[in-house]
Length: 243
Ligand code: MG
Image 1 (cartoon, rainbow, N blue to C red):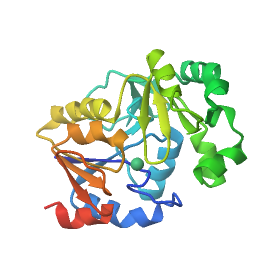
Image 2: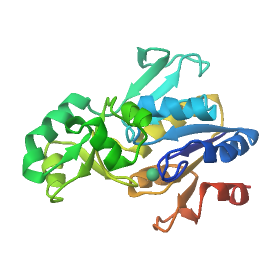
Image 3: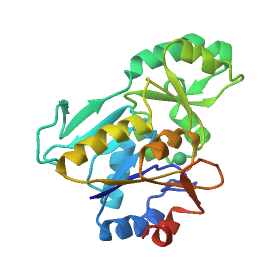
Image 4: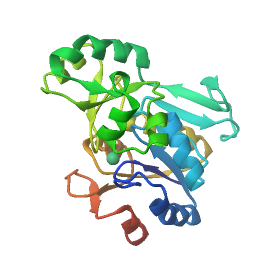
């Protein structure tokens, strides 16, 4: 079985966050029988929007490896996880409220702006998200995204509190002691219960590196360098480079 992990921002979708341009590569991957796993710093609510728009049905990994959402009845065996709505949830991250409390306590010192202390209008201005998607991004469970800071000194203050800071395509993300690769590895091991797995991943930013380290075939959109990943200009190029 072949499974492919896809980052969303600047990998699957561009500046305007529209899912439409991604449709062609998703259909192509599905026609090649890939299981498609979204693995992004985006929230569950945002990823459900993209899954619906692109007709992707499998598990997905939210908020930088903080949790895996597995549709119930997806795997033909029992999952040891929390049951929430129609999903099993495997958690690796921290509760949002703890992250929020720590950021609130240092936000003045470092001039921090993030979802929790910004209005909907400010969030739309910082991120360029359309209103509907900005609302979905505000439903946070396990991480915060820092849009603005006056000194990167906030990073060590956050790390001192046993949290991690990842650099995504646009901003910093604050989350628990997990990453995209750790969650991907846990999901791969579930697929391995059903047979041999060949794993693939596509990302564009430093917060994808742990994921690229984890899979058999890694692809990096853009010009960053990662040993073991093949650079491509856009995700469409997968059609040429994946045999
Ligand atoms: Mg990205």
